[in-house]
Image (cartoon, rainbow, N blue to C red; front, side, top):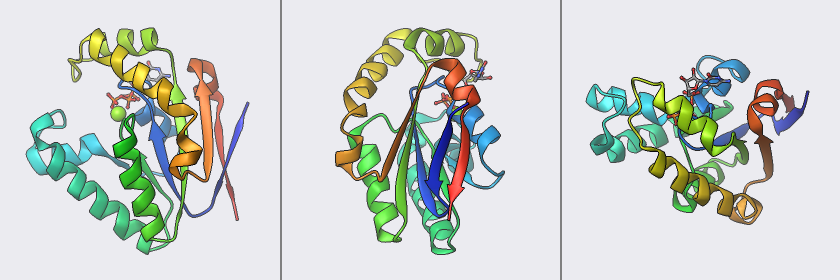
Length: 171
Ligand code: CTP
Ligand code: MG
């Protein structure tokens, strides 16, 4: 069992392709209000958690919610794919603006597992090609995360490591 140490007040940025298990992990490892999900925000602004046309408004809301929580000194988890450098840069800046340390947790589940999971989901229609491309983006990213400003970087490889990881909050 691996322990992931993070400061008590962190902005935890989950990073992983669709189907990697971010939402499942967030639900198990964090409190019920700690994770802010981009899909949930899509649903709030548009009525449809999968409406890609609502992405800009959904992220406006996500940033607003996360900012409010950080102002209150509450650890917050961003549940979004965060596979692009631009997506992560905005979150690193948001954390800094609130004097909070950004922590990256990468769920590197393996592309074929994610593709198979998504094929079985009714709420996901991404083709295998899209998921594979994003997996390649992610692989490129992993070694750059520290340079991007993440104070800590944890990479979980494979289904078991993701399932077994526990979060330890350091004071
Ligand atoms: N799943 C699973 N076993 C796990 C983790 C997830 O079978 N150990 C399943 C979930 O039940 C879900 C799918 O895999 O049907 C994707 O998991 P989810 O946590 O929703 O993945 P996300 O990374 O959140 O995907 P997305 O980016 O599309 O929201
Ligand atoms: Mg999810």
